[in-house]
Structures are given as C-alpha cells and as structure tokens.
Length: 56
Image (tube, rainbow, N blue to C red):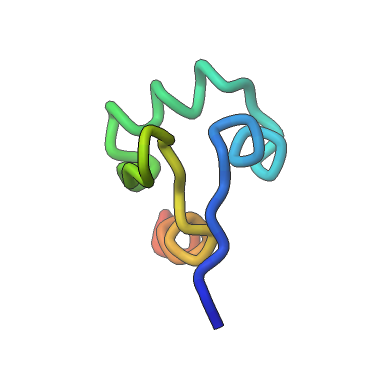
C-alpha cells in the first residue's frame, strides 16, 4: 500500500493550525521535514502521526 502524501494545507487542516504555522513548526523541528515529489512539497501522513505521538 503506497504512503499517503499530504499538502501543507492538508497538514494544517489535520492539525487545526494555519499553513504558516506548519512551516514554522518545520523550522522549529516540531514537524518532520517534507519530501519533494516532482515539483511538489508533500508530507507522509504516517510521519506526521509518528512525530506527533513522540511529542511530550
């Protein structure tokens, strides 16, 4: 089963935050860095959940 990839707006909606906060959290290390697929920036859904489960 292929990994599900999310856009920045989808990550923001999933977490209940704004897109600018997604990027802020990436720079602060709160969220994992995205991957480039073609010319697009995406996050693996599984990595978002795994990373959040590890947060205090």
